[in-house]
Length: 217
Image 1 (spheres, rainbow, N blue to C red):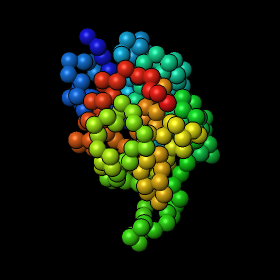
Image 2 (image 1 turned 30 degrees about the vertical axis):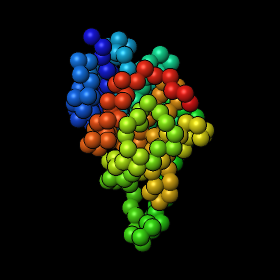
Image 3 (image 1 turned 135 degrees about the vertical axis):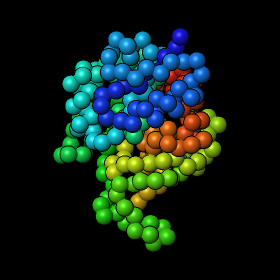
């Protein structure tokens, strides 16, 4: 039986994400584990996360999962969620800077604090927390059938800035337009929480569990 592996390194809302994946995966098994042997047997992987990139990379290294994720990304589809998106890039400026996994060229930056006023004069806050729209910049299997400018749920203070425009799948505006969905080869990642995003989030997860990997960008 096919399986979806959720990488458990101690930083992420694993229960709700695993439950959402199980709901959309049909007969596929969802394996939540930090054991590389178990995760390697899965057909696709999900890297979740909440918190900071420095702590995330430290835990991945401690559990010997950093090189494992890089290796698996060459073989099968991988979805990064929230912090799991940020750690896919080369470098984060959080905590005086830290190297990340380097699966997608680019860096992670902080929203300005205090942020500028919103379009309607509202004083914005950091972290960016709550519902916001995602505008699709180019087609990708992950967003097939998901309405353009659909609402998703965000909680973050840092955002990804990919080096190459062809890796940008979706953008969101908060203080300024920022990249909220990226993709490169077998890797796709989202800044929002699809498991908390109702219909659009479940549609996106459904697309992921049906995706064979190797995007055109």
